[in-house]
Image (cartoon, rainbow, N blue to C red; front, side, top):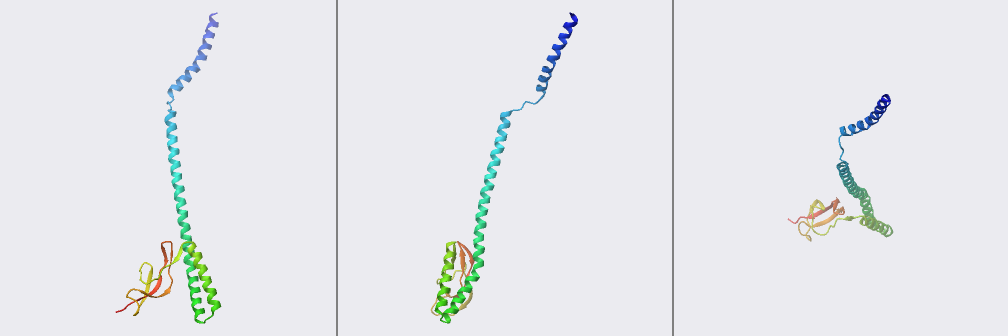
Amino acid sequence: MNEEQAELQDQMSAEIAPEEQVQEAQEQEPQIDYQAKFKEIQDLYLRTHADFENVKKRLEKDKAVALEYAYEKIASDLLPVIDTLHAALESARKEENKAISDGLELTLQKMHEVLSKHGIECVECGTDFDPHLHNAIMHVQAEHKEEGQIVEVFQKGYKYKERLLRPAMVSIAKNS
């Protein structure tokens, strides 16, 4: 029986040994604080999400600015066409061709309505010269105007919202 008991004891010790080995392995592994790890990952997620939202807002703003510049570019490209229509209108008026001048006036009126709808307006050329809106290309003697007032407009100026696309080309009075 001694042999049987020895064998049984060997089997029991063999069965216990793996449990002890597992326990030893667990003791050797570093303890992981899952709560802290979760908070760390959650914080990283929140920061990444905030960065994403900031990038999204910046891209929307950049898109709006690009669209505004596109309107500005189209308007700048149309200004020479409008100038040509104005010159044609003046020529038709000199030749007293009413049908053509009426057609050109209507075309210019519609063109200005469309531009106005998109925030593009003519620069006012009232009486006083404004160096921010007008470009004085000559000084002329004008008895009926005070010094520094606009005498004649050679080319209309335009602005997109508050930004000047092109200054008005004018002559101003010089009474000295």
